[in-house]
Figure 1 (spheres, protein in one colour):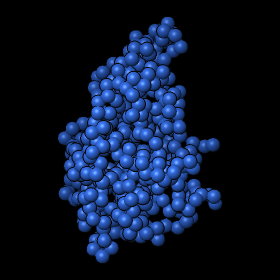
Figure 2 (cartoon, helix red, strand yellow):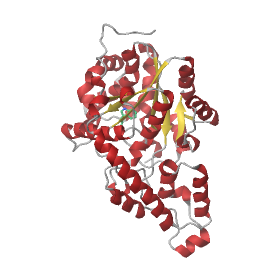
Figure 3 (cartoon, helix red, strand yellow):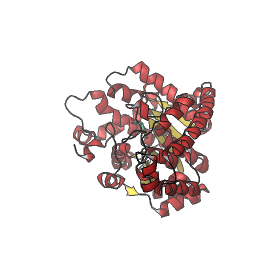
Figure 4 (cartoon, helix red, strand yellow):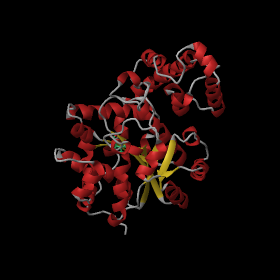
Length: 386
Ligand code: TRP
């Protein structure tokens, strides 16, 4: 199967050729000038920007200039709650939290318990709904501000989305949906309607704030098809086009592929006991040579190493230290066992601290739910901005 076929909302396997992906999706690479622009507004640099963990975008520059001009702005991201949260999931959330703090923005976070129920054959609606609450603990543990963070659980908060969703739905033909998402005759009709709900959240802030609100969506590029359509129809419905910034997916600890719940031994879950998390790191596949002698002679390959990627994408803030690790590996002076042991101890510490916050979050979930803060947008008071 061709790579392009495997990249879409429900089929994002291992794609590492990010250049090619940019071409397939037609998004723009994040350039130094956009990174500098964002860092200037934020008043701070971020490792995920410098290292291009976030690497492409649509209209990030437009979003930033609207922000600077004083337009109302908001963030939007989400999660399909089909299981426990792993480090690959929280990677974009960590960056989103930084954006929230530095830019002072509201975040709308969608938990698509409906999507996952419709998509995963064996998942019951009760289960995906419970995961929506469980996964919310991970979000809260990351330190999002409850006054500015609004969780939407689709099956329970549908009233916030439905009036927007039907307006979107009327603009969308089946043939567009089918071509964009690869639906076939045997696709259940729930999945055919679902994308409209994911798009609806990108317009919700404008409704809730009663003013034109520019939305930035940090997400994996596999979610891009939704926003492509949302952008096409936004103006016709009186909403600004949503902007996006895309992150690379954290590789799993195996020889290939993204960190994925379908391969639990290659994923570190936020709920893994710290020692179990550390153990998974010790068993990770690396870019090293089969023996210490060969490693010393030939050096390792950090560019193809899941352990190095963990440092680069999550666990090493210092650019200088990262560089040093890179070259000690390349030149063979760093041995995989030592490199893994160091990461294992960082992961163990992270999990321990995270889990304490995660337990405290149990009492705070209500404060984050959209329904505890906003009335549903009413059809009559709708602010159409044309
Ligand atoms: N469809 C996404 C998933 O399967 C969940 C989601 C909903 C999302 N809204 C989003 C992801 C906005 C990123 C941005 O995980």
